[in-house]
Image (cartoon, rainbow, N blue to C red; front, top):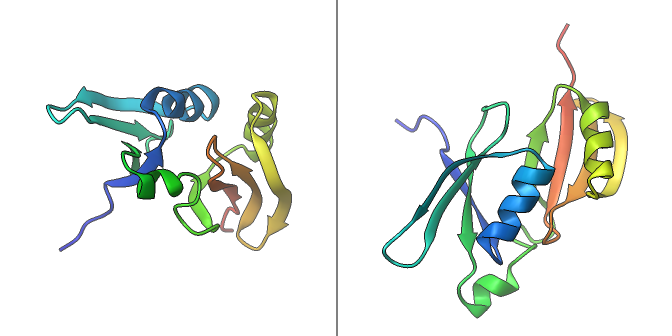
Length: 132
């Protein structure tokens, strides 16, 4: 029986620039950064709250992968990041230079805004509505 999704691969140009964005700007934590014998690295990032699957940074190594940087989902949202303090995170990310392309707005499911990572991948920042 499948019990969950452990990792989601994210194509990146270089490991260090991706770590700077996801860790220094968005606040993710490096869980593992291991050099493999193949020359690749196993770089796992976790959201600071520790919930959900981890991001596995995967360096693009050929033309097809490099052409997919920033567009792994064909223009759809790649990640849905949940927060328990939308206003603070939105303000902090903007102060750190994060580009928001849509929102914020209130939806049936919560408060949301769309940001872009350093490659142009779309990411939703969401504070889910609390069930009453």
